[in-house]
Length: 99
Image: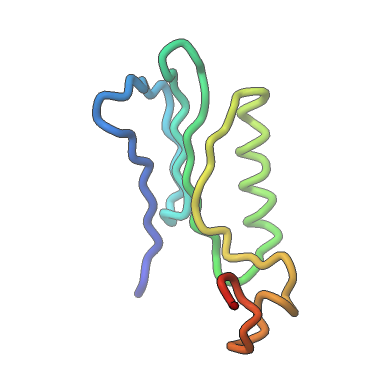
């Protein structure tokens, strides 16, 4: 079957020292806690399930809260829509870039 997979990339030459790594066994997220020069922070990426899952969202929220006041840089695909009527309206010219 199809599997999820994510990666956190840091440009060569950037001084980021990883102190801890957090990974989901299903490959849906990865967070790297570390130091960027003199600043401790978290870099993360996330690939959300196609079907909304309350337990999944709670687990992610719990992990994010565990980082306390550390700055978090997070990218990825949350597979959610802000307004289902607008975002899932089909090809009626209502999407981003529609002119």
